[in-house]
Length: 97
Image (cartoon, rainbow, N blue to C red; front, side, top):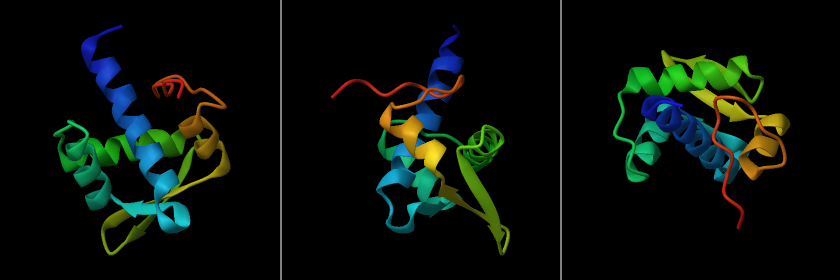
């Protein structure tokens, strides 16, 4: 597994865990990019949105375009992946607590 693959899987897990902690299980691309930066992932807005699209394709989140900004909403399958109750290829499995 390449270094980039490992990073992307971790970045996607950070997005899911962030959404799980948000009121309404929602956040926009700007908020998610800021949180990723705080967790040591200084990535572009384009890559953040690309991860959001990936998570949508896997059935973990829904996306809504609000004035040109993507807003993600976590669904129950995404919550299961964020908590480690389910796994999806391309998303890092959380460490045991």
